Image 1 (cartoon, one colour):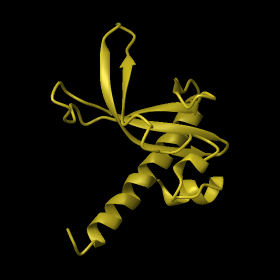
Image 2: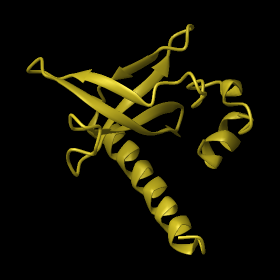
Image 3: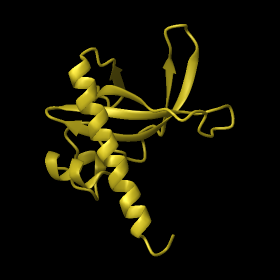
Length: 123
């Protein structure tokens, strides 16, 4: 779980089900999501992260190939929420300014992860 996400949302990082926004990445949360594109093709995507921006949540996905490997150097970003049953619901981001804020927040998360990985003596 993203530490900032936990701090901003009252989540207990030891118990992902305590998260009020997305339900966290509990063991039951899907690690992949199938997207149906506009042309009706289905793309299997790995869930990279779920993160907050302002009062909304977003999900970052990366498309996978048939072997489950990253298929392209691209990331899909959608609005995100869960149903009362904990099922993920994605929504297109229609507003350009909102998409820009969500993209910038994702870029910051990735930069932070790269910084942490680069400073890890185990690597």
